[in-house]
View 1 (cartoon, rainbow, N blue to C red):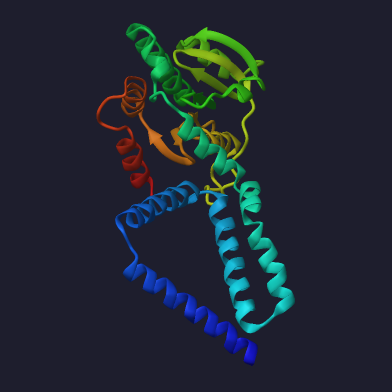
View 2 (cartoon, rainbow, N blue to C red; view 1 turned 180 degrees about the vertical axis):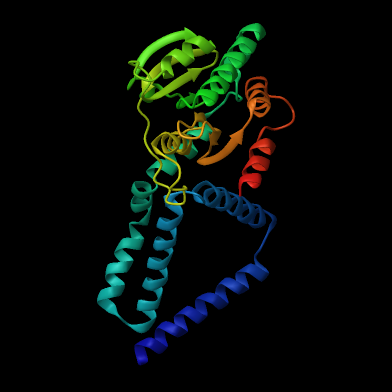
Length: 289
């Protein structure tokens, strides 16, 4: 009991000292420091909000809480074990949050704006590429032929391109339709689009492990979501069962796009218009909710 009282007294003194320092020693630099840390923590939380990292972070927070409680209660062995884990938390977090950290560093390292590669292309070529993608998706939707088109943005997709067959061809509706035609060599897999060219076909993507994804969505949709979770790429999906055209970005999927929606989204994606296409994405998702 005496050790518990000592631990509680130390904890109380620590809180009192922290409160006194907060009230009496807080300067402009301290306020700025706190704001910067708050922004960083907020961005980290937003980064992992819809990922497996959020559950891992909760588990790590529980470990810290258990370590503090075990220290107050006097459970020496348990406290030593938990304290060892917490003290090595930086290494543990790097291992556990490797995908999220990689994604964050990619965002920091991106110097160019979205569609910078597209702006280097001629406007007519961009228009032909948009027309080709729209015509292909609409045609495949009517015929109930499945398709998955991944549009590369700032994060390179070379690792995925290498899993397929390199094409490096100009985008056109006949080419894309022929790729996804059933019983052809390249129909099974994803097409990677870079700017106004088809980089590769029959590419293999990693599936999402998000358990909140509807069970009605098959492998093609899960692969489309998976690639947008680890990169800033966007995916277009045509359902083989229903013919529904869907759109995936940042691990989220919006279903039921028509020809006008698809054309508007691609125009804004390639031309970077002032009105953000995320409004379309959100409104579509709310309609389907």
